Image (cartoon, rainbow, N blue to C red; front, top):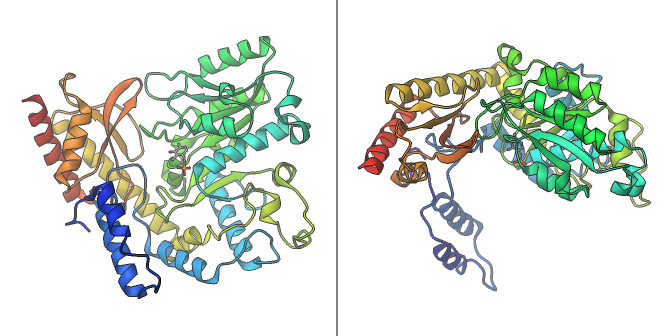
Length: 441
Ligand SMILES: *Cc1c(COP(=O)(O)O)cnc(C)c1O
């Protein structure tokens, strides 16, 4: 993989043409068809396994995670009910409790479940918060609310909040984007002012969403202060730590997440920095009874409610449920907590190495994240950053992107992959230097 281009080499028509050879009346040999699929995917894909992929948290998957997916696909347990898959349901509950421990919650108080990803977990937070704040929301929906519902997230938050509000039936206007402090963290003064205003106008603030590791810049909102605000205004407090939350496995990183244990719920993706194959998110909370009030339904064709454990279909958005959690469970079992801690530390120090090399090469660093994502720009503001990113990707050795941080265009490189080393960062620096001088020529 390191010697292959990191970016796709095939055009849409080339891919569609290639597909014509697959389907015929008689079928074909698995080795042959599978081989062709692998060829197509290695040429027509941004390569997550590539050590020069400094992209969007998509992992180079752990080998135990890959094996876990094969086991899952083969035994194909149905996790809707406990009674159909007691071992698998218990493995997931055990793993969720382990991750709850990273947050600072006891195993007995941690509830939650695996999700398709961070978006589903954040969606679950919205439904749980609405169900708690308004008991008749379950039966009457948004009409039960006494006014316009409001949830608060920062302008630098992950904007899936907009479609989540749409999906949940409260509408996109329910999302209030709070300004940030110039460094990518929520401005809590502004948050309080907005809540006060909204309350005076008869609206219904019900949820405060902190981001712990913004997608663009890895910034962490002031969690402790936000949790105090949430308590003061009787709002649910959710922490979206979709990618940054992986760092909680390292006690040395806890100081950055101070206040997370006081939250009502947390999102952590296993398919980002914890490096298991997609899709694997987690919704963690401490109110199992509320999850049941939010998702419970009884159907005559389903086995009777579990007496020994929790039926996932009565506590989560999904019904038929794939065994998502095995990827993380088996990776943890093989790597150990220390293996994961080393992975977190190695990627963070590689990001530090990247920062140093960038500064030495006269780039400006624009974010101050303790996590593995670096936003940077050339000394000269007039060079179009999109062109630089495209030229680097074109070269085939590294993948980075352009993004916006605090209203400014930036280049963005994230280091969460376990195969990247200093030599790959050096190649990125080289390609950036070439792209910059070409663009300013
Ligand atoms: C990636 C991300 C999400 C969305 O998670 P998916 O797994 O892509 O659904 C939400 N919030 C943050 C902060 C993210 O980085």
